[in-house]
Length: 352
Ligand SMILES: Nc1ncnc2c1ncn2[C@@H]1O[C@H](COP(=O)(O)OP(=O)(O)OP(=O)(O)O)[C@@H](O)[C@H]1O
Ligand SMILES: [Mg+2]
Image (tube, rainbow, N blue to C red; front, top):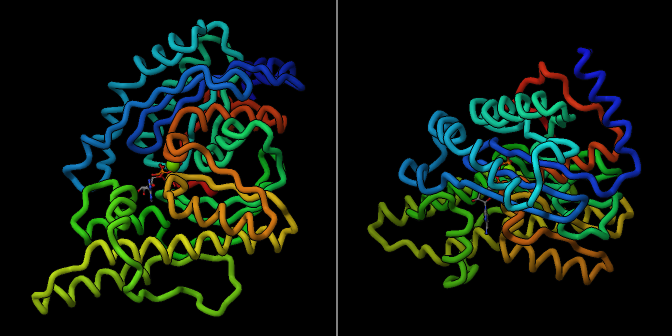
């Protein structure tokens, strides 16, 4: 351990029991550069420079373009986040930065910036797992929430149900065996000629449709907590291709609605079943697909019917943001984790 890391460890030891820490969160794992300042669970600022418009014409995120745009955005965004929060950089207690999972080049931009920033200010830096950040944002959204709880991770790159045993301790109960649910939303949207990102587009189109098209239910009759979305996605593609070959019009709204109803049924069922299995009375939604109104409605309904309390972040905090990274840094501090050394590397494929 370097002399810097030892000094940071001592600084971090003084954080014990403090709920008013001033933490800057930096996120750059995909196509959003995001920075936020938290004082404890209070959001002082929350800034996002989204690249959605830049990547839209490619139908998805182009990694190299994402990295370059993070470089352009990050310095101003950190300054804006501090200005809006009314906080001087010297006043920060700690910095959290996403080190994985995500696009390697994109991660390295945020991480290099955060390492230099923390080192220059002599502040502890926390290496945040992006997915744990999606979970941790719930502690800010619902300050009364405490572990343990069962959590549905539903994002662009991950789908799982997990038991959050403590602030930084997760036990996986079931994961996807192929596509992530957000990926399935995006791929189905492409078949329906909807722009990227597809999730919100499918949601809007589905409002005009009915769930009348039969799609296959994966793991039917099994009590597994695992997920599989590629069969559903393929069924949508085959359905669309068959109609196209016959020269028939695609009932896009019905297809969007049928797809959305099936995947939100599967995810809400798994979450409630996992809560029963773990004898846990709190369920939490995390990740971008958590913004889906049908998923939120079904989880709320099934939780109420099963005497469970349901938590989900406001829609803005479901997709990538800086608050979630600061929130997870706070969880790591609470759990007594050591700050990062200056040789911290990015890990594109780190597991939740
Ligand atoms: N209302 C919605 N309904 C369904 N899906 C949605 C909705 N809003 C966003 N999404 C989906 O959420 C995903 C983005 O979520 P998120 O930002 O958590 O993913 P990511 O950061 O790319 O992946 P990960 O967090 O797994 O690394 C996209 O696939 C998008 O289509
Ligand atoms: Mg994400």
